[in-house]
Image 1 (cartoon, one colour):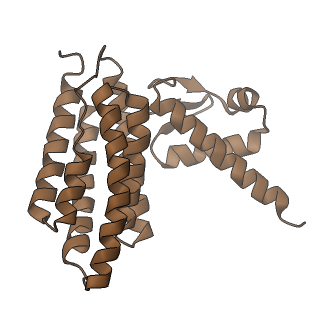
Image 2: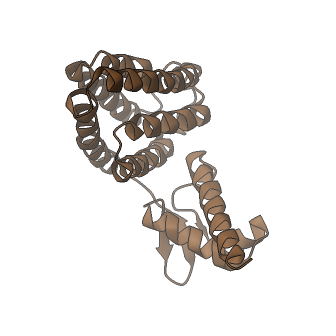
Length: 229
C-alpha cells in the first residue's frame, strides 16, 4: 500500500524520540553527554534516518544540542532557565484557569461535563500524589505530565495544551538534572494535584492560582537545595 514506508518511519521516529526523552528524564542520559546518530541507530537496531529526525525533533524541543562535527549532547539547564519556565508556565495556566472558570460554555450541561472531566483528571492527580509521597521521581513525572496534559486539554485549544506540555517536559528535564543529586526525595516532592483540581471544581481562580504559586515556590526551593534534608 503506498505510503506505508513513510508512516512506519514517522512512527519509528516518534518512538525513538519518546525513548530518548524518557532516558533524559530518568537521568540515564546526563547533561553534556554526547552521542552520535550512528550510536543511537546501533543501540536501537534501526537505520540512521529516523534516528537523525528524532534527534532533530528533540533539539527543537530544547532537550538536546547539536554539536558541530560530533553529533548531539543533552542540554544542560540552569536554575535561571527553570525560573523562566515557571514564569512562562504561569502565564499559560492563568489563561487556562480563566477559561475553565469564567470562559464561555458555562451552562449547567457544560459545567456538568467539565466536572466529570475534572474528576478523571483528579484520579491522575491522586496517582501523582502517591508517587510524590513515596519519593518515586520516575513514576511522578509520568503521572504529572499526564495530569497537566489532560487538565490543559479541557481548555479546548490543542495548540495551547501542546505548548504547555512541551514546557512541562522541559521543566522536568531541568528539574531532574538537579533532583537526581538528592539521596532521598520521600515526602519532599510537591503533591498538591488534587488540591488544584478541587479549586477548579469549586470555580475558585484565586485558590487555583495560589496552589500553582505554592507549587512553583516549592519546586524552585527544592532545586536550589537538592541535597537538603
